[in-house]
Amino acid sequence: MIEFRAVHKRFPNGTTAVHDLTLSMPAGGITVLVGSSGCGKTTTLRMINRMVEPTSGTIHVDGRDVCSQDAALLRRSIGYVIQQSGLFPHRTVLDNIATVPLLLGWGRRRARARAAGLLETVGLPPDAGRRYPHQLSGGQQQRVGVARALAADPPVLLMDEPFGAVDPVVRTQLQDELLRLQRDLGKTVVFVTHDIDEAVRLGDRIAVFRTGGHLVQCAAPAELLARPADPFVADFLGAERALMLLSLIPLGDLPGAPAPEGGRWELVLGPGRRPEGWRDRSAADGDGALLPVRPLRDGDSLLSALNESVGSPCGLVVRVDAGGALTGVTSREEIHERAGSAHASAALAADACPRAAPLPLDHTPGDTA
Image (cartoon, rainbow, N blue to C red; front, top):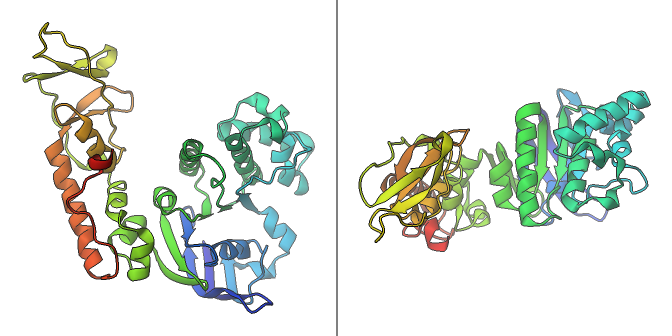
């Protein structure tokens, strides 16, 4: 666990970057720090590994005051990932990843073996280890940065807007990779971003800061979206917070039903009961062209289901298991009913924050799909 106790950071020019911060970041979870530029979130992160020294207060990692430890040794025990990956351009990928283990006194063979194993962990091919950073794409460089941060198996991983410099598609892939790694490794992650969508997607807890380094609210994503602490948090989350809330509700919360056997639309299955598309039985030749279907799994969000239901010719969302085999369908009406209750819950929270933008209760994600 990481604990901030009444921490202040005031720079020599008089600027207060962090004000009286008391905050606990649970072990094994992802705590995301969000807020606009200049709110103190990066300063907060950098005080954990003493890249920035606190003016007053204490910071404990696993019960030990960071200021009582040697700064260099502390930094080698904490993984650190920044936006531009920070790789050494004159070293191969393998040697970049092995940097911290070598500094800790590991033998070269052991350090390189660890680095080679981490290439697979972060989704890079073995031959990437022989390349230099300039020979990799931006997304690959960020993966190497994550691998280097994990090389000495640190219990804590600090990530300062690590995916902010890549395009949206690669950013989503890197977010998926981080979530997969976290499921496997269970690190204590502190993640800084200015993107609330990224925070909601990644965070077990989200801490919202406002200018002047004031912590306004720290809560689980669902609680934050449904019950913002004050108008500032509600405004920061934006008018689409109800839709973000739907992204946290799994489709598996809704029951499935057998696929219909009669009616106009027939669900065509391929080998292994994999859905291939919808066929219109009313077509003149009785064998109309297949309309595409995008099956969803129980872990997919209610927001995805809502969008899919709007595009479905018969208003049914097709559901499959992990292997892609049909498990059933869910109707548009059931999805809309569940979505409506989630919207209503967020709307009630909005009533307590009168300055917040009104929730679009008569608007569904399908209107903009």
